[in-house]
Length: 443
Image 1 (cartoon, one colour):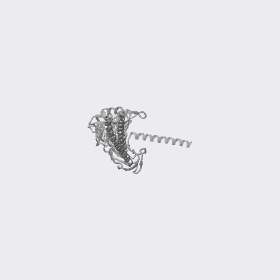
Image 2 (cartoon, rainbow, N blue to C red):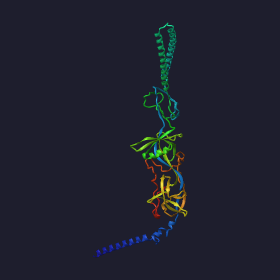
Image 3 (tube, rainbow, N blue to C red):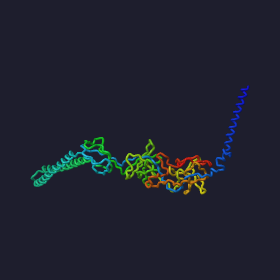
Image 4 (cartoon, rainbow, N blue to C red):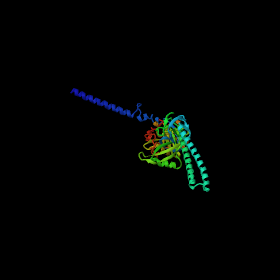
């Protein structure tokens, strides 16, 4: 009995200790370590922390013309590519070019041994001379026979025969001339010339080899680099917008580097294919570039930016300024009282640099672009840095700054065309004083 009573007393004691610990914990929730209510202690006693200035960066909303573009990946293709081959059999005597050399149409590239073809040409010339001499003699005889026939000293049959002989020799001379032309053409084939302006590549044969027209490989490949094509595809949903842009003149196209910002070359759209690929649902397009600086090279993959339209006088702001929450997009506007005030906005096209604000923001208003972690509606702010919105490209891509990426809803091919729901930095939204925008790249 004594042991049972001890166990009961120990259980009651443990339960009492647990209740005491629970009461102390609840008391800690209601009061801070300084004995004041916890809410008052967290705000520094009556909102002292709320009055602390939040360090932010700001920028001004402004009016710009924003280009509407669509991006794709294209392949550079030469305007013309020619594999130089021999048209006659023979030994390769010399190569008249340096690998990588620029050549003009008609420049000599190679020479086949012409000895055989020169002999055939000379033979044809000699044969014509022989037949011309026979023709001259036959014509003299014909004139003599004509006089004899008139005096009835020669039969009409002999005269007719001689006349036919002259006609036969005249035809033979014409055939000789054709043989000369053929031999001359064959002889000219022994000297191989470039059929186009372009650049020669690495030679495919060496001097001294016997070449035949049936050889699988050629002598060298000549590629025309100026101008040059870029072939790319777009989803069929983009076709109406492309046709609309092309309807007012050749649409402007820019070839971009791997960073999708550096302009390699500017050109224009030249061809929209006449059918859509049923397997992929895409349409093929071809753009032409002057390529004066040889920034594009056949076989190269490049990013292509096609200009579709320009939004005139749009209100733009840096993309980090636009936050998103359950109630939609919003920005913090810096007021005259030095506090940040939350404003709901409607956005249009957007990229990583700027966003078009269609409503809710006026040009010239100052918006917050960073420091959202501690920011709330009505918070006092300290402007640590003022930045300018990234410059939008002009309506003509060729005039845009090469190191600044144009804006206006450009996207990879296959993306939606409306641009009204572009991704942007997101936050938990404007829910009371504790709403925070956690999506800024600057945080």
